[in-house]
Every structure is written in C-alpha cells, then in structure tokens.
Length: 337
Image: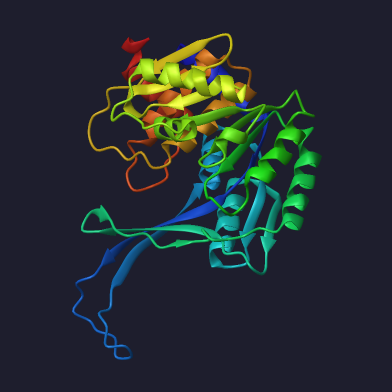
C-alpha cells in the first residue's frame, strides 16, 4: 500500500462502529526500590519505596485505547469493573478517550477490578501482584451483558471478543451463548483473541500467537516455528474451527489464513531494545479497524504489522500506534513492498 492509500483507509476509521467485550484491566507501572535502609516501626520489617506510578489501560482496555489512537471514534465497551480505585481509574481513562461506557457494569460486591502491577526494579520488571484474577461472575450478570450486546450489535461494524483471564467473564458455556448470538448478525465482523477458550469460538476470525496455536492443538510448539509449521498447523486448526485464523509470529511477522487465501507479511528488521507487551492488542485493534473500514485481508495484515512494529519500540508501557507513526515506519521500510 502507498502512503496515500493508507491515509485514505485511516480516514474511514472515524465512520465505523466497534464494540469490545471482554476482560478490561489496568496496568500499573512504577519504580520499586527495595534497599532503602528504612524499617517499619510497627512491623520491624524492611520498607520498600515506590515512585513514578503510572496507570495504563491493559488487556481488553488496551485494545480500546489502540482503537482510539488509530482514529476509531465510535467505540463501545461491554463488561465489568469493580467499584474500587482501579475501576474508577479505568472509567476515568475511558471517559478521557471518549469511549462509550454505557454497557460497562460497575459491580459493588464480589468483584475486584483487574490489575497487573508492573514494578521495575534495577531496570527489570519484578514480581507482579495481580488483582481480579480469581473473580467469579454470576450467570445473571453475564446474561445482562449479553442482553446489552444484543441491543448494540445491530449498530456495530465489528465486535472484538477478548478473553485474557481464565475466570472473570468468558467460559465454555458463555462462549457457546456468544456463538449463537453472533450467528444472528451476519453483517457484523467478529474478531476474537482468547487465551483459554479459543477452540470454542465459531463465526469469528481468531487471533493467536504460535504458542497459543500449539496449545489449542495440544502439541508441543517448536522453539522457532517456521512458516511451514504455521501454515500447516494453522490450516489444521482452521478446518476444525471453521473460521479464519490470524497468526502473530513475533519478529517473523503475521500470517492470515482462510478458505480462499493465505496472506503473509514479514516482520520488519527493527533495531534496539523491544517490548512486546501489548503488541497483540495492537494487532487486534488494527485488524478490526481495517476490516471494518473495508480493507482487504492483504491490506489489513500489512497495516497491522506496521502498527505492531511501532508498539514494540515503546518500552515499559502498553503502547499504541498512530497514523503518523505508522506512516513514518512505512516510509522507512518501504523497500519491503
């Protein structure tokens, strides 16, 4: 694609309607200092110091902020947050982005907003303390969310389905409910990114990395999956699921498979330190925006690859990719076309 073609595609992003249902979370970054020389008078234990805290949208929330950065101005979220400081911060960040949170339920009991703490100690990420991982959502509340989803689907061009955690929102029974609902809206494009229940989704393009693909097929992944491995096993999985497959291959690029075509784009030869946290979210958001705006799979996979290459160069954050950043990278590596 040329620079003008990419720009024209991005102009259409503001006209599409995208919904995101799934596991919304925050990432809390801060610097941790353990050698402080201070001890607690109350417990006589060492006191650690934290500094430079920064909250960033993570998991399904990161998909949302990627959509907004790409220029998708009509974005709705469906799911849950807790009535706690992390949930309130998430809502604040969503509202600042102009996200429609009408169908994001605030639960006042039995729900901790999902949070990844990411302390940096001596330049390296230290042990995380995660919140919300053991949440259990009642069937009654999930049915309320599905009812809301049914109301908005008729207005959507694309729905993104995110499953980050094993417990909070989606399980096998609930994915079956989503499959039935999706079958009633053939004009909507569906894209799923599901770590544990991806084998159950029907009627959607499924985004996987090579480790997830191997896990879904219950085989051992090779240390360095080559293109032949990805095509062969990707088609095996695709034939079982009956839907298209989008495979992220790290620095090797992205592969798309469906019944009619195979689309491949190679990764860019980036230099310097890279941070892959959130790159899959960027691919999901970019692919969804492109397909919702009428791009072909060949075009969408190229733009998603560029967007992910922007994101991985942003360290210690769940990064996003803007049009200007994508175009700059496109111009730098235009010899790859």
